[in-house]
Image (cartoon, rainbow, N blue to C red):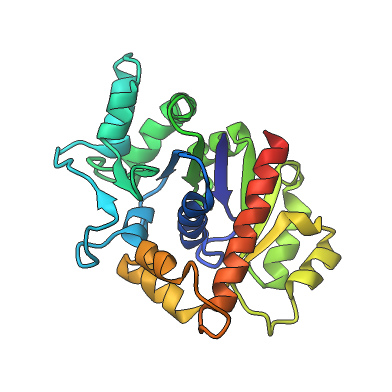
Length: 271
């Protein structure tokens, strides 16, 4: 299943950290050996790889033996551009592996800049993602809020679009006025969620007529933010996954796991 994570605004909606959190928790919650593949269609200092893994965070949850100049998404695009078929071996050889080879990240390795990445993705993103579906149970794509052709194509092809919202009335109004096509297949997430805001989850559901089972929240949490910045997200979520009520991270983990449960239920309903 193909899922695009997207926001109508740049830099405010925590798309990358939300996707990273959802992908890790989905892997931990899944009772079967589900394969989740994550990638992005843009280059940024904060990317999925930097959130999931840092050279300083230890390698107990990361399994990657690839040191080729061209790897990850770049390598896969090269194979497709040359008219070859992607094989399971190629896909997983050039991906970074996490959590017992259940979570895979395809970095844009070897692609010099955003313009080159966009040029190649505009031509091949649909075929690439369709090929990835042959080997992954769930394909999660972090898409840019910038008006890129590849983003438009990915949103059109996605089975589900996770719309990342912020607790800002102007930004919420802008989305719900202008993106009716996206809303038809949308699941909503509010990242960096502040329960003290006037725009609570319940209020957003009421004002914008969102089904209650289609809006999850990932609360503001300093330790979570630090873990994302330091490339220790997997370690943070593993450490706190079974935390108890008296733990300072209990409310965060409860809300994040509830968001994943809503997300998974939506996937099951759409699948």
